[in-house]
Image (cartoon, rainbow, N blue to C red; front, side, top):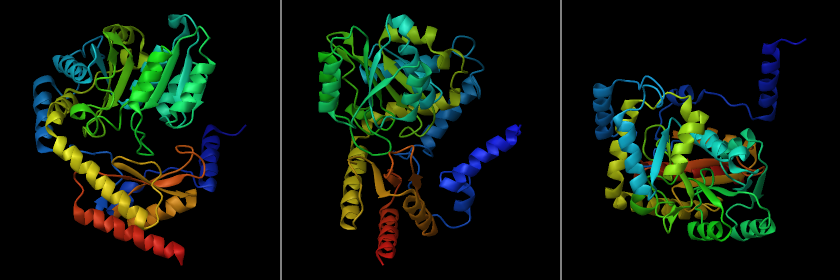
Length: 393
């Protein structure tokens, strides 16, 4: 029988042959040449190195320690955690909130807990956008729930599917991102909420790429939508690891859902609570968001200008209408080549390939940040123009 190591090596070798092997060599590659700009990160507001947020994290660590020392149900339930949850609930317009160590953890464990057929009384029907994040699909797999997938951002198709299952006496969930991380387009919130109300469906909305950047006071597109006539419409999840520049995640929900997750969500129950230092930085960032309307407008304006410039150069940016701009080149080879070309020009980017995105839509993902300068944007466009010229020869 083959050894464990040989089987694992065979798997990675097969990935290498198909061009899909992932590596952690990016940092070394970047260090080997001067970097003009990094468009691969999700630090949309430039908070990751903000001196005030660093100081807020430091101050919280000085008071409470580096780590929280245990799960929230043991020694780790600190005042800063509770205070941040209350601030999130207030901003999102929900009764309560609960924080997690990461977005993947929040989605895969919180959504899984909510889909428990024994608790719901029947196996739920889950209507999912085809381009949802892997963590959302994982939650359904954990509970052995078959997803009914609707065409990306197609509310008419979602209506057809909901109507087809309308007579089934089973709990209905609608699961979607509000800004799609690989495509940079926005969910039609009014239309989705109207469908959820009409078909009495529970909403689970992923605000990872909207939190901090879009919506009322920058608190996400679901803010103000999660309650109707005093009744909860579902859960809005978001992360602290993108626009807020730190780490962790939250779910904003009703008081009943929060209490249920505290007692049923394994990702919360069995995880050490987030570090006080992280909570300090996140709390300071969260408090600053309402004062950043001008900065958010600037970010979206620059994104629109960049898309227009890229279209003039013949690039396909798909349905993007936010700060996330995909350069859809089709083949995996082309995406890897473009990424390598940009790095040679001093531009760091991300090559996104199947299965993260659908077949034949491999791309280089450009993520804009307030920290990017006009000079850096010009360098990006110049490098892309030269790659396009090379390809057309």
